[in-house]
Image (cartoon, rainbow, N blue to C red; front, side):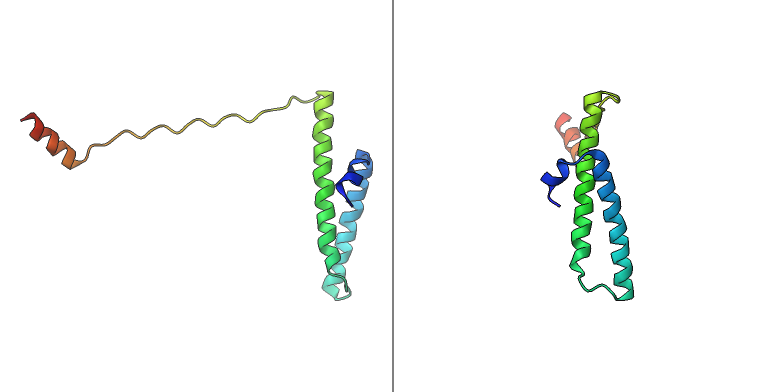
Length: 102
């Protein structure tokens, strides 16, 4: 299925198609294990269809929640910047500083 076709469907229809696709994938896996599956490319196509359905369903769910404003949209917090390490003086620097003072 193409993404354009999926987006035209309602959320319930997408969920139904997703359920059917998962069931078909399970059946194909059983056929593959028992050696009855001849068209193995169907597994790959079906996995991709499932991913497309899940992605678009997720996009629609987020947009529906945003429109209804049932849940506030939480923006990720910025991580605090790492503190700079204090500069350490090496033994050679200490000795040169003592020489400079004397």
